[in-house]
Image (cartoon, rainbow, N blue to C red; front, side, top):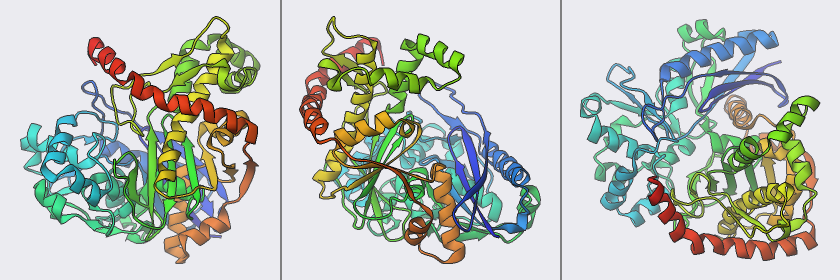
Length: 509
C-alpha cells in the first residue's frame, strides 16, 4: 500500500494528513505556530516557524500511523494565500512574511490601480488591488523598508517557501499565483505588463506549474529531518481555496461550494476565464489544469456566529459544558424555534467590514426590525439568516455572470448543522450536499499529489474518491418566503452605507 501526504500550511497551524491510494484518510496531525501583530492591522509570521512545524508534523504523523517513510509515494501542498516571503541571493529570509490578513497596504493598492490602470489590472489579473494581495506588499517594502527591498532576489508565497526548503527547487502553482496581482490569469503566465509598470523584476518570480505537476523531489537532508524517503516527489499544490474546492469535488461546471469558516467563501468552477466587470468576484486559475474559478468572499460568516456565541450565549455555553455538547448545536436548536424570517428581523453580518459584494472596510453589522416580541431565539436565527443572505449575494453575482449552479457542496464548521444546511438550501434555492471528505484543503493537496504521481486526472480522482454523504433539497414554500426577505436585505447596504461610514469615522477606525 502506498500513501499520499497532504499538507495544509494555514494561518495558525499546519495540518498533515495521510491518504491511501483509495482516498481513505488514515491519520492526521496538526502543529500550531504564532502570529505576530507588531502594529494594529499588521500580520506577520516567521517562515522558520512554518519549516519547523512542517518537520514536526510529518514526523508525528508517520509515528502516529506507524507508516514507513518510503511508503509515502508523493506530497502535495496547500497553503494560506497572498503572503510575501522575501529572500536574498543566498535564499535567506530577509524579514518576517507579510500575511493575507495584513491591512497595511491601502495606499499601495491605490498606487497600483492608478499606475497600471484599474480596468487593465482587472482584465489581466481578474481582480482589483486589495490589501491582502501580494504585489501591494512588495510596493510597501520598497517604500518603507528600502534597506530590505534592496536585498530581495526571490519572492515566494508561504507554502512555496517550505517546498523550496524540502526540494531546493523554486516553483509556484498558477492557482496560488493568481492571488499575487502579478499573474496574467487568462494565459496562466506572469504578466510582463503589470510587473514592468510596477517595476517588480520578473526574475524574482518562481517558475509556474499546474497544481498536479511535480515541482521537485525531497532532498536527502530534508528526508533525514522528516523521516520520508529522499527523492519523494512533491507536486506544486495550490492555494487553500483551490485545494479546498478540489477536496470536496468542485471540479466540474455547475457545482459550487460554500466554505463556512470564520470567513465564508462561495467558490464555483469555471471552464473559461471570465471577469466580473465590477471586480466584485475574484477570478483565479483553478487547481484543475486548464480551468478557472470565481469566488466571493464574506469576511465574517462563521465569525458573526462566533461573535454572537462569545458575547450573548453565556447560558448556552454553560449548558454545553454541563452536558458535554457543542454550544453551536444548542444555539441552532434554539434558533429553530423561531419562525422563518425571525418575525421581520434582519441581521447585516458586516462585523469585519465586507469584501463581496461590497468591498468596504467601513461597512458595519446591524439588526434591523427589532421589536418587543423578539427574544434571543429570534436574534440567533436572524444572525444565521443574515450570514446566509450575505453568502447568497456571491451566488447572485455568479449567476449574473452566466454560470448556473445546480448543486452546492458545504464544508467547514457550519456544515455540521442540518438546520443551517436546510436554511442554505432554502435561501439559495438549490440542493445542498455534504461529502465524505472533511479534511478540506489538506485532502485537496493529497489528491493533487496522487494526480502527479499516478498521472491521473484530478477530476477523475475526485469522482473516484469523493462521495456524497447527505443531500438536502430546498423547500419551495420556504424559498418563496425567503426571497421576499432577501430582496429587503439586498437594499439595506445602500441605504445604510453613508451611516456606516459616518459611524466608522466618528469612532476613529
